Image (cartoon, rainbow, N blue to C red; front, top):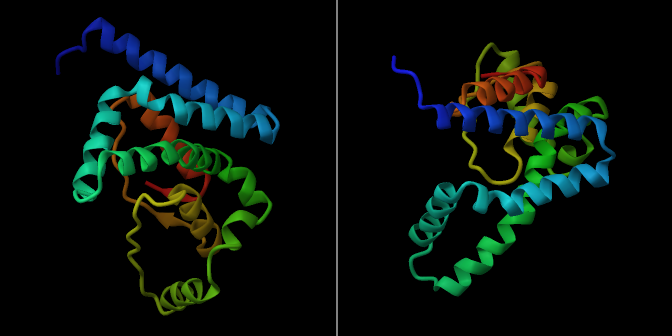
Length: 177
């Protein structure tokens, strides 16, 4: 395997440092500052990751071909705050776990959870397929808490150190990548 160019190694170390810093801030800071940091990161994301931003814009055009660019721009502008809320929910899932996941339980019906428990009690499993709608990391942590663990299929982040931080975070929440 060839070694990465120096600029890519530096970039990976930089982003790993940013990830560690954000995780440390979310642990140490009060909730309003945590939410503000997550909102800020979500708003800065298109400028920090322009290739991903272009892909997201193209995907909006593919998903909504009959909608004009103004409508898609409105959706785009609403994505920042939603992504900030999702990031905050994912990073604070451990804290929510210790308080019984009040944010999740308010929006999840007991009927679906009862079906899953019934399947598990009979020695059966279940395969849940979720979209990237809402904070699915938080939902997975809640399900792992309620069901005693959960195996998840995830993509690999191309930065091995950041990927390791993310997978360790998921394991602490009862998710087995």
